[in-house]
Image 1 (tube, rainbow, N blue to C red):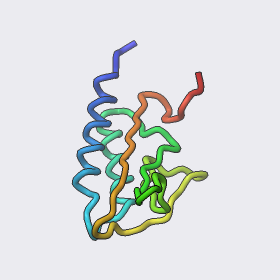
Image 2 (cartoon, rainbow, N blue to C red; image 1 turned 90 degrees about the vertical axis):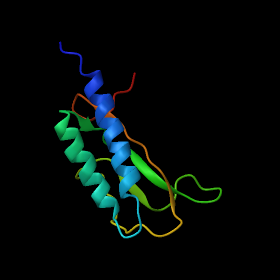
Image 3 (spheres, rainbow, N blue to C red; image 1 turned 45 degrees about the horizontal axis):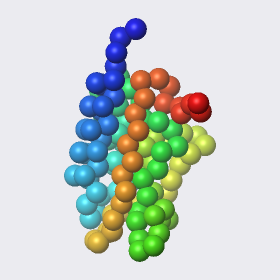
Image 4 (cartoon, helix red, strand yellow; image 1 turned 180 degrees about the vertical axis):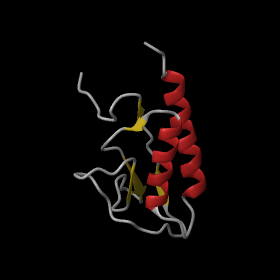
Amino acid sequence: VEDRRADVVMAAWNCAEVALRLVQVGNTNTQITEAFGKIAEDFKCKPVQGVLSHQLKKHVIDGTKAIIGIETEDQKVDEFEFEMNEVYCIDVVMSTGEGKGKET
């Protein structure tokens, strides 16, 4: 079996870099989700389902605005446009498998 850890690490790193550049006034959360999908495809891996990046506010770590790593039929978020002075915690999780987490 081929070791794909380097691909997953590079995919996650590139996704974080893209998110850093795309979280700007006027851009949307769906632009980031689409970019994550393209990057994962380039590195032959998939974003893990159910991973959300949330807006942060004072005393609130999971604000109402969220960026989803990959949309599925069951998991979707509303599209929104980034505004001035918003803060987000970007979570990036990639997988060489099906993109589904496993409990161990």
